[in-house]
Length: 368
Image (cartoon, rainbow, N blue to C red; front, side, top):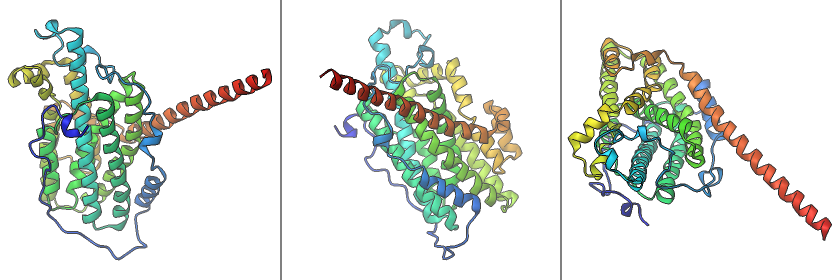
């Protein structure tokens, strides 16, 4: 069944065209490069994997509880509507919220793929072009995986959220070569990483846990790439140029915060938009969720050298300023370790099952 037949409501246009600006830059120096970036490029090559093989797609998923979502995570919980819902209604609500969330992951990964390709085209340094080429493949794999999960396991999809689309458009329309880094690597991917991690660490469903753990292993490299490239470049900018980028970050962070309401889901259940927005704002669980989602963005923004007064005031207003002290390297190392541990556990279990099969075959042969 085509994706269009799975959308709760069809996208406004089948193809979204964003006018391209900026120059394609060639670099004729092939033997020079920053050691850290070239090492990351090597790691990007070494860590390529096949989503059709590494993930166990035979695992069953209940479409009415794809993520093991607690009732408190649903913004309708505790409202006057909640008591009226049957168990079937609550299952459909979980399905819709999971579909909405993973649909935004899917659309964001396509955006990341396009931004990575733009970086290959526009960044002046060849070492960065090399790494971005591996990231483009990573993002294609992520889009493939999220699309398959939605199609085969959840059974429905949501169009791209207006705020996510707005930030993607702003990122891609900007002619400055560093903006795809800033908009995608720092803001969109930083937010996605935190969302992935929260679901990965709370779900009791093995398939989404596998998907998110393996995707996060890739994304840890991507964020490291953005930090390296932008930290070096932003040391060269004037105060005025840095302020322009800080304003972009401020606007992008407010857009990302407002993206997380899930109002579209409640509207599909017949709840007026204004009332749905109110429920989202009043939900204690979602308020905590929104705050924790900036755990990857704030320390990264500070690390690359964007930490002016106006930006700090915006983070105080959002209630996330203290996250600037988080240890980003430690978080990324944990992402890598969790994926590797999950692999080790899965392969050990498979090896044990194969050994048991061999033992049984030998015993049956002896009896015969």
